[in-house]
Amino acid sequence: MSFFLKKTLIFSLLFIINLTINSQNTAFSLDSLSQKGYNELSDLFYESKPDTLKAITYANAYFSKAIKEKDTMEMVNGKYYLADIKNDENIYLNYCDSLIKLTETKPNKNFPSCIYIDRSKYYLHKNVINKSLTDVLKVIEITKKIKNDSLLNISKMFLALLKSRQKKHKKSNILYKQVYNYVLKNQYFNPKSDFYSIIVNMPFSYIHLKKYDSAYIYCNKAKSIYKKSMDSSFYLGNLNKIYATINFKQKNFNKAISYYNKVTPFLIDDENYYALRNNFYLIAKCYDSLKNHNSALKHYLKVDSLHQLHKSPSENLQFTFKYLTKHYKLKSNFKKQLYYLDKLLKIKNALNEQHKSLDKTFTEEYDIPNLLAEKKAIIYTLEKQIQKSKRNKLIYLSLLFITTLLILYQLKKRNIYKKRFLDLVNQRESIKHITIQNTKNTVTNKHNIPNNIVTSILKELDIFEKEKAFLNSDNSLQALANKVNTNTNYLSKVINHHKNTTFSNYINNLRINYTVKRLKTDSLLRKYTIKAIANEVGFKNAESFSKAFYKFTEIKPSYFIKELEKTEINI
Image (cartoon, helix red, strand yellow):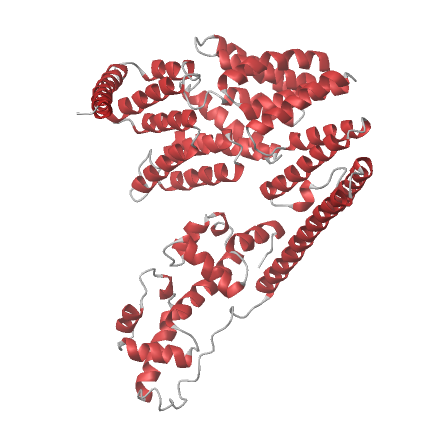
C-alpha cells in the first residue's frame, strides 16, 4: 500500500470518528439544554450571540424543548431565534405560514390568531407597516366569529400603534383607552402579559395629542406599576423616552438630550435598531435646536450609519438626509452632497410606496422636478471641477439622460395606468363584453348542432351566469357540460360561436367582471390580500387571478384597489 493511500485512509478514519463524537456531543448537549427553562435558554441565546455556533445550539435547544412539550408559541419563538442568528427571516416567516395553513381551516380561540399576532409584532418591529396591519385585521375578523376578548384587545393595541404611525392620533388614543380599561379591569399589568406595553403607549398617545399633563399622569402611573415588578428595567428605561419626548415637545432640549441618552442602552440591548435610529435622530434635532451643529452632525451621521445596516424607510430619514445634503452643500463638498441627495430621492420614493400617496410624501422643500434640477446642477459642477476628459463629461451626461428617460417612462406608465383605472371605474358595461347572440338565430351548419340543443345550452348558461356559479373554483368544461345537460363538444362549440371566446376566457371574464363590480362597492373586500380575493372569486391562486385581471383590464388588481382606496370613489 502506497504512503499516500495510507495517509488518505488515516484521515478518513479520523474524520468519521470526529463526526461520530460531535454528533453524540450535540445530541447530549441538546438533551441536557432542553431541561432548562425557556427564559434561561433565551438569556443564554442573547448572551452567546457573538459566538454564532453557540447561539444556534441554544436556539435549537429552545425549539426542541418546545416540540417535546408541544408548545406551539414557544416553537415560533425558537424559529424566531434561529432566523435572528442566521440572519434569514424566512426561517421564521415560513414556519408561521405553515402553522397558519395548518390551523386556518379549523380555527379555534387561539389559532391561527396567535400566529397572526406574533407575525404582526415581527413586521411592526421591522417597520413593514402594511403587512403588520393586514395580520392585525385578520385577527379582528377571526375574533368576531370566535370570541376571544384577550386577543381582540391585543389586536386593538397593535391597531392603535399602527394608526399612530399613520398620524391618526385621535383614533389611536380611543383604541388605547379601550385596551387600557380592559387591562385595568382584568388586572393584566404584569411582565409576562402581552398588554404590559400598554402602560407606556398611553402617555405617548397623549403626547401626540399635545396633552402633556395627561401624559405625565399616565407616565407616573406606569412608573409605580413597573417599580413593583422585578423584571421591568427595559420598560422603566422606556419611560425615560416618554420624559424625553415631553421635554422635547416643550423645547426643554438639554433635559430631553439627557433622557434620550438614558434610553440608548436599553434599545441596544433590545436590538431595536429602528427605535435606536429614531432616538439618535431626536438627539440630533435637540442639538440642532441648540445651535450645537457639530453634535447634531455627529448624531445625524449615526442615523445614516444605522440605516445602512438596517434599511427601513421612515420620515426621520428624510430630515436626516436633507440636513446632511444642506450641510455638505455649505461645505462645497459636492460628492457628499450628491451622495445624500441620491439617498433623499430613494427614501422619498420608498415612503411614497409605503404611504400610497405621492402628494403626501413630497410636500416639503423638494418635489421631483426640483430635486432632479438640483441633481443636474451638482453633476454639472462636478464636471467643471474634474475637467479630466470628454469621456467623463459623456458619462455624466449619459447618466443624466438615462435618469431622465427612466423618470419620463415612469410618469408615462403612471398616466397610462391612471387613465385605464378611470375608464374601468366609470364604465358601466362589462369589461371586454361578451355578446350573447339571440337564441332564435339559426345555427350555422358547420357546427352541426340542432337549434333546440343550442337554445337549451344558452338558457342554461344564462342561469349559470345569473346564479354566479362561475365563482366555484372547480368549474371545468366537463363539469359545466354535466350541469347544462350536454356534452363537452357541444358546449365548447356553443361558447366559441355564441360567446365569441374559449371556455377558459368565458369563465375568467365573468369572474373579473364580478370582481371589478364588487371591489367598487365593497370596502371590506378591498382590505383582503390578493390571494384571498382570488379564492373568493373562484381562482385557485393569486398568480392566475392577477394574470386574468390584467388580461381583461390592462391594470394590476393591487393598483386598482390602491386607487379605489386613495380616491375614495362612491360607486
